[in-house]
Length: 358
Image 1 (cartoon, rainbow, N blue to C red):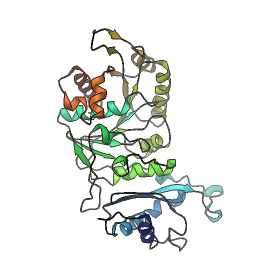
Image 2 (cartoon, one colour):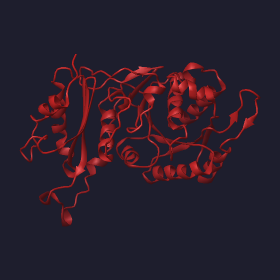
Image 3 (tube, one colour):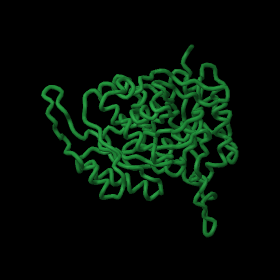
C-alpha cells in the first residue's frame, strides 16, 4: 500500500468550506501541522477562538473527507484557536463573551476516575512513575488506561514496548493499544519516532482533547494521564476540560526540583483540582556491589515539603538501574518483576492513591 501524500490530503480538504466565509479551508490557510505516518493522518484547523464550538461539525467533515482517501487508516483533526477574530467579530462593550464553551468539562462515559501525574520540572522520572503506577493499579484487578499527554516528548510507547499503530473502530473512534494489561494512547503512535512536533500550544492542547474523547477507552476504573513537565497550556487545558479526580506530583529530593514541585501544587490548587500527594523519586541509591546506601540527591526533601504544604506524602522510590533498564526495555519493573522491593513500593503508593479515589 502506497503512502498517502500531503497533496492528496490537502486536495480532499479543499472540498470543505468555511460556513461563514464561503471558501475552502485550505485556500483560507486554516490547515496547519499536517502529519502523515503509515496511513495515520493528523492536522490542525486554525479558527478564531469564539468560533470554535460552532465549527465542530466542520472538523468532523474534514476528518470524514480525509478518511475517504484510499490508504488512510485514522484521521485526527483538531480545532486550534490560533487566529485573532476579524474586526467584525471583535466583541465590544457589554457583548464581551469569554467563550465558556472552552472550559466545559468533557463527559468521559465509562471512565470512573482520572488521575494526572505531574512534575514541576523534567528529568525527575515522572513518566517512569506514571507507567509503573498504572501497572500497579492494574495488578490489583483494576481496569486502567494510560494517556501520554507529552505531545512534544512522548515516551510511553517505548516504556510499554508498543511499536504498533492504532486502528479505527467501526464507530470511527481510535482503538487504544494494549500491553501488560493496560490500554494506552500516545501521539507517539501516530508520528515517526524522530519527528519534532512543531505545534503551538493551542494545537497541542487540541490534539490532546482528541486523544481523549476520540479514543474508544471502554470501561475504565481509572485513566492515568502522564502530563508533560512544568505548568503550561496543556496543564491548564487538562484542568479546565478534563474531569480530573485528582493529581499526583513527582519530585526528587533536592531543592531545585522541590521549588518547581511547589509551582505544580499551586497550579492545581488554583484550578481547584485535589492533589493527592507528593512522591519522592530517586530518593536514595543502594550500591549493587557493596550494598552501601548513598543519598545522591539528598533524601526526605519531598516528605518535608509535603508536611510543610499540608499534603500527604505518598511514598519514595529509589534510584535503581533495574527500574531504568526495564522501562527502557518496554517491560517496566512492576510487570517484569512484580515481587521485587521496588515493585512493592509502587504498588503501595498506588494503593495509597486509590484509597483517596474511593
